[in-house]
Image (cartoon, rainbow, N blue to C red; front, side, top):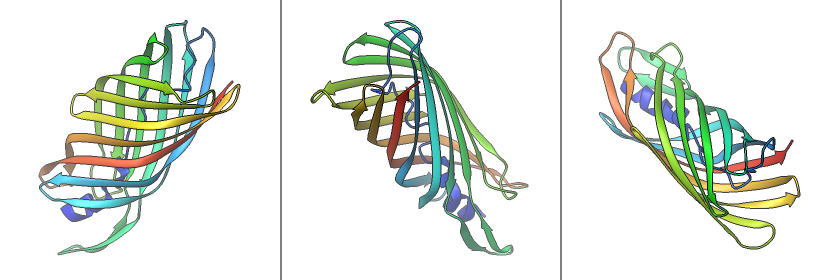
Length: 224
């Protein structure tokens, strides 16, 4: 049964990515930025009582960032991710077919240090479920982070983010391209690590595993 959990853990992929201070954020009182997108080529590697690699199936994410002043902004993010469906032969259980899903959420307070550096502090919560075979699990932590940006020209901006929380980390780098005065498209590559995730099979002992999730994130942002 542990193998089916491992193979389906793609539901954890990029569970809170990006939790960064997006380069499309506007530090202006009353300004509202909506971002919509998903991930491409997502993968997960698990290490613990078992080792596994798996691919994702589909997912989506969105964020809303509201400017509070020329220094502060409040950001809310939510997403949904699903693993590829797996059919696995489990000794004594026969063939089991199911998939994993994850529902991440986080809220952040952003602080603009200067035109190229922003800080964030916030809280993240991810609910992970695997159908009827495994008890639903969750991971929650407060986190802090930093985003640095560098303008290439009037339209393109490079950015890099590092976020750290209890048992969780995120490193992300990408480019944001300005489509108009009110919209931008962002592409980034992220690596997220989550440690000591509980994997509890119903009526069986709980197992722990560490996960590394990678993928390309594509987001479209527009000012409302």
